[in-house]
Image (cartoon, rainbow, N blue to C red; front, top):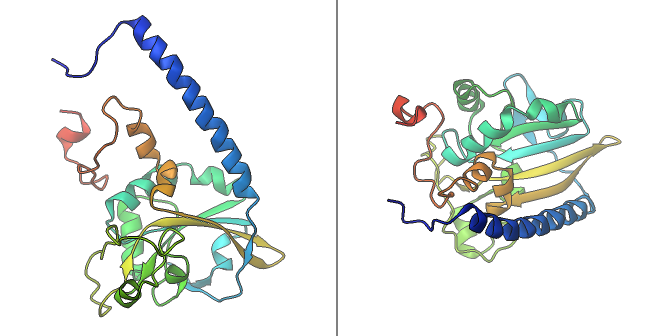
Length: 244
């Protein structure tokens, strides 16, 4: 027998209508935040960043692929369950963004061969590019060395006051000694008159709203208190997929 509170339809409706008012307040507040997000000043980027793609080396400007807007997912490493489930969510609608002048790309500090193979395994269409050897991840707050953390100069989520508890090492990198720590996030850029500008970034809980799976789980009867069962989409067994 369920341990959750049980009531009549009338009792449910009364509480649900009260909650609906709170949800409307949140929607209006979200609309206001979206407006203020668009009003953020743009920061000109003059630094040159080099990326490896499946074809040729590319600059940050090249990643726009003929569009004027670019959204980057800062991907921790191939096989990261949380980064991967987020990519599962947006990969299906990325074509709609691209047809509205917005390019999308996943960026990780891993060799392009590993990233390309992982992209193929996952069946994703959004390109994966490598920033290995570039300062890109460090400059945009998703990578830092042990020395930076120890000295207190590592910036995460736009400030330096954090406890480092959510700083994963990721899989062992055989091609790096003392590999830096990586975290996830997203950044947005604009291209205007040949100049690239940084317009927005979000990290930690700031990307929850972009994580489609999380939003659906949050509305399921038992919520999303834990993600211990999270796997890559090709790692769930048949019984799990069929709900048995």
